[in-house]
Amino acid sequence: MRDRLRPTSHHRASLAGVALSVAAAAGALATAFGDAAGAVWPAIILAWATALLLASLIGLATARPERGRPTSAAPIWVAVLSVLVLVGGGLSIALAIGAAEPGAALLGGLPLGAAVLVYAVGILPALIIPALYAWGFERNTLAREDLERLRAHLRDAEDGR
View: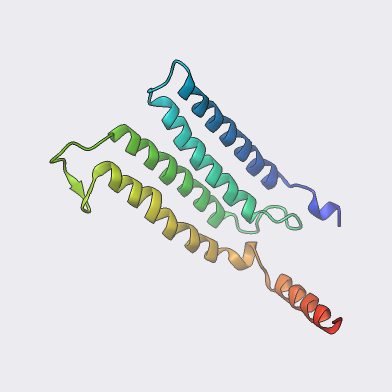
């Protein structure tokens, strides 16, 4: 049982991503009290740290100790890369655009920066991530054998009452 719970390379990479993103976010936030107060680069670092944290958490959520790497990594890598690009890039673009001037062009009824946030950071990941999770669910998360084992444990627990 102990060997089954040993972290795999998938776990270690995801944990390294979590640690790196937290350190980057802490560093970016610490600059708010220093000479870089008001600079744009800490906000950009914070945007990419947030994206890395989300992507790393996806990696942790999909890693199973007894299986090691997911059997089909394509949905997971697409999800991780889409989160990195959409969230990190979307937040960075919105920060680079800045505040909208009165009379500025609208995209979908929103100023350009707000549209990037709503569509690229909010709606697209909310559509992509669940679809990719469903695509690889049986292969990577809960296989038929796992479900049968769970049902057997539940039957045993009910009989033991």
